Length: 203
Image (cartoon, rainbow, N blue to C red; front, side, top):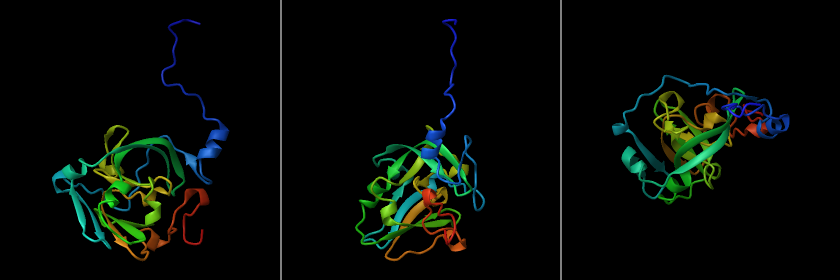
């Protein structure tokens, strides 16, 4: 074999055992990044973007785009899983942990609603977005997050179906009691664990 021979980017096929360990039931592996949205793509100038924590807190908190970028940032590599049955392995993100954001308010709330440009909302127990489980991300694969994928910033909760990772997120409303969000009000499961196939009410 020639010493000049090389195969750039060849990684071989994934073994079935790896797929079975990483692919939740009912999912298939997707190499592209499908775009699915409930409405038109908002276009928010960064000068007008802010992120707020409101609701059951001692004092509401707000960050401008520039203030948000002074916060400690993390890089995240996770598999993601859409309720429409595609999964994507080893996605790379950068952003701010919700632990960092929530540490700046005092609250006794147990639930949170993420609210977004365009009116989309999704609900989560607070315990599902704390302890290193969720981020507000503005970078995907080393580039600013594209608007069709939720840019300038989206919620990332990779251990739940991806409708919980709300695009175009603008804040969190903390609640004492749970309240269904957009898809949860239309029949989607209230929790959304891909490993339990919690797709719709009754799953």
